Length: 138
Image 1 (tube, rainbow, N blue to C red):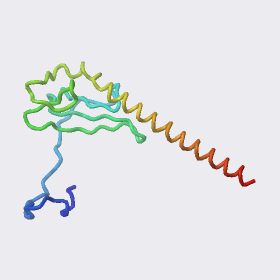
Image 2 (image 1 turned 180 degrees about the vertical axis):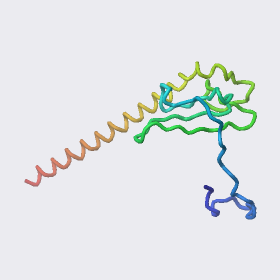
Image 3 (image 1 turned 60 degrees about the vertical axis):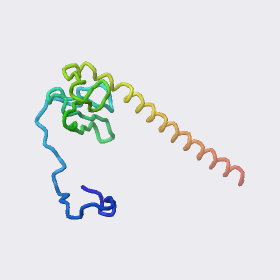
Image 4 (image 1 turned 135 degrees about the vertical axis):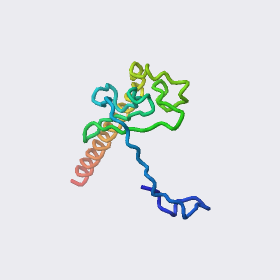
């Protein structure tokens, strides 16, 4: 799906064929998000030479996995959780570095907890305000 034409930059070639395939079919891999410990998390796929990484997340609909291909001449660097020049990446060490997702996972859990308690507090305040309003009108 492409952006609406009105969002294209000035001088954009209107005759450019933007109906190219934007998906890449990846080879089969043994990677499975259910085998991982940290959610959400970004995981290098050693089976695919770290050219591919997966984003794993637990949602209300269950476990989801989205896969991404690193740009040319880069591999997914599990130490910094992003694609990096191939000569900086030790792909064979990636599985042992999956715990590098701990900060992301903990931050997400904290944000989720804060959102829950914020919603609870707002619910509590609206309940208290409604009770006070009822009591003052009596």
